Length: 209
Length: 209
Image 1 (tube, rainbow over the protein chains, first blue to last red):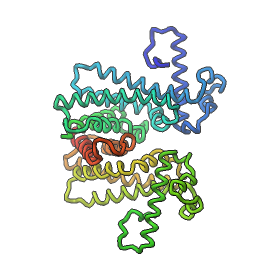
Image 2 (image 1 turned 90 degrees about the horizontal axis):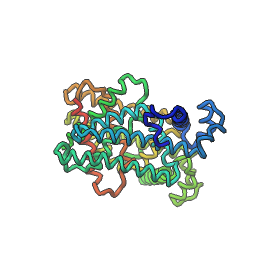
Image 3 (image 1 turned 180 degrees about the vertical axis):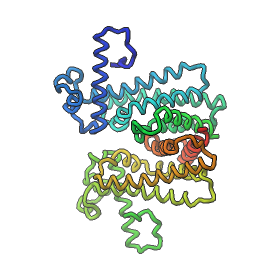
Image 4 (image 1 turned 45 degrees about the horizontal axis):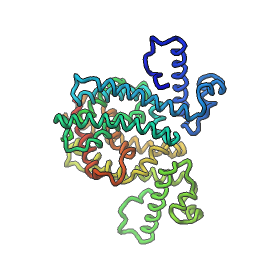
C-alpha cells in the first residue's frame, strides 16, 4: 500500500479502484480511532463506519493493528513526498525551503487532523518492530530539517550559536500542535493559518540571534 | 489541595508535613500515569511506587480520578502563579513579558515533563464536570496570553494583521511540545533550551510582518 498516494492516472482501472478502496478504509479507520481512541475501537466499528460487513474488512487486513500501521505509515509517505518536493527547490535558499515546508506541512496537518491526532495519541500501541520502522522514518525527516537549519546557519541566515536540534523541535512544535487547536471551518482560513505558521517559524529561526 | 504550591514557611508543622505528603503522592501518581497510562495504572501501582499500603492511600482519595484531577489542577495552579508574576512586571513591554513567560513556562515544562505528558495524554479521562473546570482555567490562561499579543500589536511590536489567537497557539505549541522531545540530562542545558524557545517565540511574533 506504500504507493497509494501517487497520482496513478495511467494505472489500470482495477488498481485505481483498489487504491480508492484502500483510501476509504484508512479514512474510516482514522475517523473511528480519532473519536473512540485506538484501544476502544473495534473492527466492527470501522466496518459500520464503512457500511460493510466485518468479514469484508478482513479481506484487507489481518488485525486492527494493520490499519493503525498503514494509517501512520501513510502519514510518513505523505511527509516524505512534501520533503522531496521541497528538497528539489534548489532555486530557494535554506530558509525559503523551510518556509515552503512549514506552509505545506501545516496545510497537510489541517487537512488530515484526524490521522495526525491518531499518530500522536496511538503510535505507542504499535508492536515494537512497527514502531521502530516509523521512528526510523521520523529520524530521517528530522535529520532533513535539522540539516536545512544547519545550512541556514552556515549561510548566516540563522544564529549559528543556537542548537539546531532544539530549533528543529521548535519548528516541529508549530506544525505538530495544530491538530490540538485547529477546527475545520474556523473563521481564519487554513491558507492564512498556514502562512502565519510559516512566517512565525521562519522569523523565529532568523531572529534568534 | 489548591494552595499546596504556596511557600507556607509560616504555617504550622502539621500542615507543612501534610503538604509534603500531598506532593509525594501526586509525584508518584504522575510517574505511574506517565509510564503506564492512566487507564492501565491502578491505585495498587501508585501505593507500591510510594512504598505504602493501598489502604493508606485511600486516606487521601476516594477514586483514582481524584489523583488525576489534583495533578492536572496543580499544573494550572502553577501556570497561574507564573502568569500572575509575569503580569505584575509592568516595567516590561508586552513582548518582554511574553519572553519572560515563555522562558519560565518552558523551564517548568522541562522540570515537570511527566505531569505535562499526563495532562495531554489523559485529560480526556476526567469526568465532564472536572474536565470543564480545567478547560475554563485553560481558557483564562489563553485569554491572558492573547491579550498580551494584542497589546504588542497595538504597540506596533507585532504585525496587527495577523490573527492573535493563531499566534497564541504558535506560542503554546513551542512550550507544550517540549514534553514530546525533551529528555532530562540532554547535552544542551534546560536553561539554554528555555532561552532558545523564548527567543524563537518572540522573534516569531515580532517578525511575522
